[in-house]
Length: 203
Image (cartoon, rainbow, N blue to C red; front, side, top):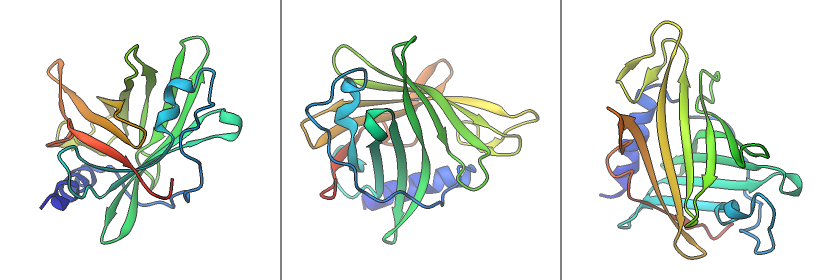
């Protein structure tokens, strides 16, 4: 069953110490507004609440949320897994415009029970409209790493990931989540290179 796709993904992430479980902000931000201008305009299509599933279809059991900060001053970003009808938050954090580098700076917590894993990086927009999230994950000593299958060593360790977002109409976004291995990029988990985000009715 396709539902098992995300159940397996959640299991992989949890098994390697990427903690799940914290209160999640309620829905309330509007869908992407056509009147948005300025530096955040290329990212406005992301705003909303999205079901994430395999591109080929089926239940995905994950929800992505992008919301504006006051006055379009930043973007709040979070992902939760859904199991047995209940949400289990995976990560959350902020995307903020960097007026020197002309992209968004990103800081996310992947450990919502103690804060021992974080993601830092950038979010940028390509000329064709594709948004790219370049990620470095920082693991505290002893925290399991999905890239190696073992806990981070003394002093902690890092791993690199990349995610792309491409609008496919007003209510659908194609996305791929990859991890670095041997100088190249591979799916973070099976099928994560072909995912689709569909706007939820509440957003």
